[in-house]
Length: 153
Length: 185
Image (cartoon, rainbow over all chains, first blue to last red):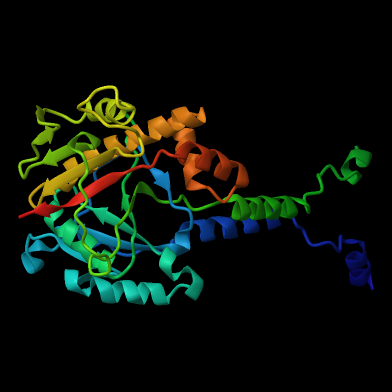
């Protein structure tokens, strides 16, 4: 009987003071582990900076094309290569790649596709103009030279 | 003494969890992943789809920028050491309105042509293209009565009716005609 009496007297509430800590831990856990959808870049990317930048309006309409020397130059050589979705592609494959990217969009938005070019500073204009020509043929005519902001001006 | 022991000195912290939740939800909602930025370009249509026509454009209406394969600049028959003067030159050229017989007739007819070689580096091209676009943005900004930065914000978000109005007004009879020629071999 004595035991029961004691129990009745003790506080029946669960201590909730640690609850915010638990939630904070959850918050931090998700903050740390969240990785924004990113592709592994396998070409050199030292992009020249510019000042007159414009923002992309809708991220869903953007497809990225990377250009630069391969990171693993002993295997792939020192000539600049194109990268799209984690793999190297050839210039002539661009039309097919654009069609694939367009197929991911809604039908009404397909002609609004924007190609963001992330090009290394050492790449020559020759290959860039070849890429532009292929994009014209693929009817993906909105282009953006993705560059970081230069802060000096 | 006994009294102070009995009166719970603790602050009720059960709502702390709710506060943390509120914070979490606030940040979840307000965080936008930084948008990518860059220099925009509208490519011409597929060359197979358009009829090739020879249109004579008077020499005075074309501002020629040539960049050779060792990144040397040749602008309007002058050798340039760096790109810093391009912006002012483009502005003077576009806003000439027929004053100087060697410069453009009017902003509608002015064309800035950038021509590179296949061996020209991307770095110098971006530098030049940035200056030329910057010159146009400066002129548009002046027409709209805002700063260059503000103008680019307006131009990036024309879905807003106010922005759309300012944008169309400043662009009226003032096209941005930058031609990027195919490089020579």
